Image 1 (cartoon, rainbow, N blue to C red):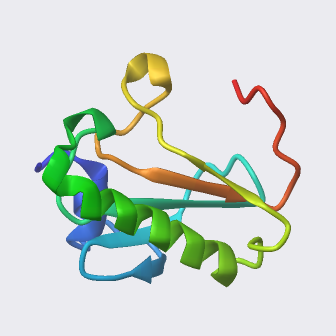
Image 2: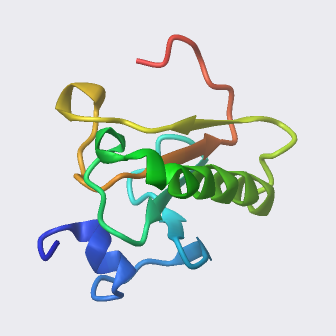
Amino acid sequence: MSDCIFCHIVTRTIPATLVYEDDLVIAFDDINPQAPTHTLVIPRKHVTSIAELEDLDVGLLGRLMLAGNKISKLKGIADSGYRFVINTGANGGQTVSHLHLHVLGGRHMAWPPG
């Protein structure tokens, strides 16, 4: 999508410092971090939200999670704990219409979250 900021990051038309990438996903640090570690993992292909995923996308969702685990190790938060968040739709807190997994850590995460 031509107006999607995350698609522009994927195509490198908007700069971002990548933390991780493979053939299906890329990851970069959030520009408005909500924790000492706050990295976003996004699919390379445009998917508006998790609500659009279908059965054949199970591998993509799995890859987002596995990339999040790798990032937790790269960022040094794997042993202390971390949180994955996927917001869906406006009431779910989604502000960019491109599926993304938040990897948050580096501090105690309270519950309930919001």
